[in-house]
Every structure is written in structure tokens, then in C-alpha cells.
Amino acid sequence: MQIEINAEDRFIDPVEEGYDLIIRTNPKPTESMVGRRLFIDELVLVAAPTVKYPPAGGPVDAILMSRIGEVRDWVVDAGDGPVTYQPQPVMRLSSILMIQQAVQAGRGAAVLPWSLVAEEAALGRLAHWGHVINHRIEVWVLHASSRLSSPKVTSFVAFLTAQFPDGKLVISSKS
Image (cartoon, rainbow, N blue to C red; front, side, top):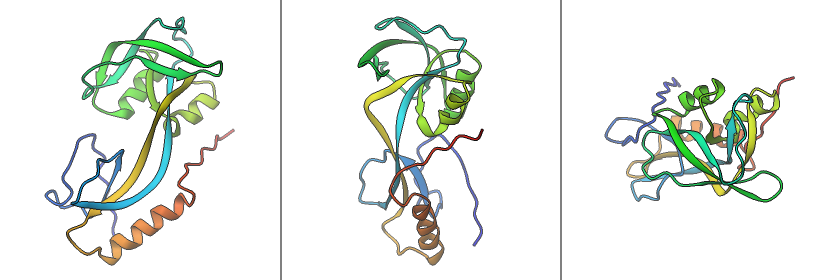
């Protein structure tokens, strides 16, 4: 088996573009795709430690995905109950990894998957302002339903699902 990975932050049609399978977050149900959920991840509000922690209900310099239209308040649980922040866009970027780097550089705060920032938060390189309330992401491996799965696709899907046996993502911090 040969594996080729293309990481793109755009919506693709795997059949039209010739992909055997795709990994997608929060996929919309469709009759043309089938798959398995790999894991659920939480979303958190983070910023560099140098970014001033705003008062509850206050404005926050925000780094957003460029494809997000309407900007809504961020509601997080910071441990003492819900806190609402008003994101004020200062940057819009097309890649979640670019957003993470901009946050680490102190350009503002962003809502990111916990799996992406947990280690940096544990090491004190990012400040964790709270978990986004009632919003998680599901990560799925999908392939076209119009064709029978090849042995290589079946094997790779089995490998991926074995990495997340309980449908949970395990985060460990290196010390």
C-alpha cells in the first residue's frame, strides 16, 4: 500500500478528484459518502499568554477562518460558568494551522480544537480561556458509497479506527 496525503482547507469531491478516502470534520450527511467517525474533539478558546485576558462580555481581538461569514459571540465555560466574549476580527486565515501560528505569535485569540493546542497549553505557551459550550467537532473518515471499498481502503479505515477505539482522542503532554 502506498499512502499519499493532501492537506487542504477546502471542500473537495473525492470521487471527482480521484481520492480513495477523505478525513473531514463535521461532515453533512450525504448519500454519496459513507464512513466512520474516528473521534470527537472539543473546541477551546486560546490566546498567547501575552494577550490581555478581557473582561466577561468584552471585545476580543479574534483570528478567524476566512470562510466564516457572520461572526457570533464566543460562549465558553472557564470553570466558573459561562462567559461570553465578542470577537473582533483582526485576521482571517484560510488554514487552521496558520490560525494556530498567529495565536502563538500573540496576534489575538481563536477557537481551536483541543487536540491541536493541548500540548502548548500544558506547557504554558498558550493560555486556555475555556471550552466552547455546546460545540464539538466530529472527525470522520469517508469514502464514496457508489463503489465497493477496495482492500486498501478497508485496511486503512480499519487502521485509523483502531487508533481511536473508544471514539475518543487521547491527549498526552510531553514533559
